[in-house]
Amino acid sequence: MSKKNVLSQLATQFSESYTKETSVRLRIIDQFIAYCVAMSVIQVGYAVLVGHFPMNSLLSGVAVSLGSAVITGTEYSCSI
Image (cartoon, rainbow, N blue to C red):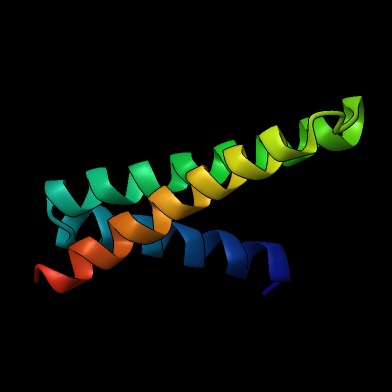
C-alpha cells in the first residue's frame, strides 16, 4: 500500500470518527480555535510579505488571536 493511500485512509477514518463521536458544542469550539490560529498565521504571513512597519500592531494582533485560542481551550477543558 502506498503512503498516499494510507494517509488518505487515516484522514477519512479520523474525520468519520470525529463527526460521529464529538458533540456539536465541542466541534464549534474546535472551529473557533482553528479560526484564531488561522488569523495568527495570516497576520504573520502578511507581515512577512508586506512588511511589519507597526510592529506593536502585529505583535498585539498575534497575541490576541493566540491568546483567545488558548483561553478558549483552557476554559473548555476546565468546564468538563
